[in-house]
Length: 191
Image 1 (cartoon, rainbow, N blue to C red):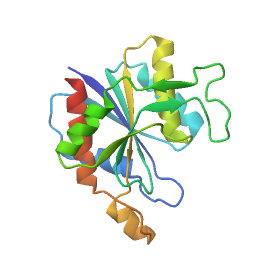
Image 2 (cartoon, rainbow, N blue to C red):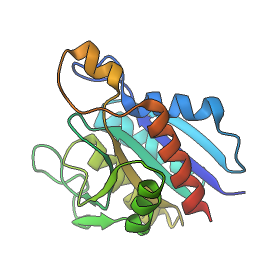
Image 3 (cartoon, rainbow, N blue to C red):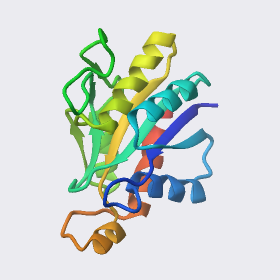
């Protein structure tokens, strides 16, 4: 049975919820496929997140799919690259590779979502904050430990409820649509 680690982040800053965690909660309420999905919520703290991720990856997974919210995003973003850089410009891993590219066919993944009526795009990299760190460190730790796990980072738009509570005019996407997209992607990559 294919084993997949699905991670999301806790709330942070002005957002009392995180669309990534809301989507995972929704997914686990209805998903009944044949995959062994293990879900985790990570803190918005680089040191704690990286230690939890490293420990979790040791358990052995075929895939590690990390989710994060992207305020202002109009579509689901499939991140192609994790960079060895922190927000302050220093490296995540001293002497580590400059970047890791996802080995999954992201154009095909985006096409599958588009065919299902879910807007998405392949994005060049996950920024320089914690989402980027999760993508980079996931691949770095697997490489370092000789694990075959393939990694992917997916940025999700805010939910309509988040936008309404915030009183902003940011783009949003429903939680059921996001969780459906995640299910489609895990089923596709597990084939």
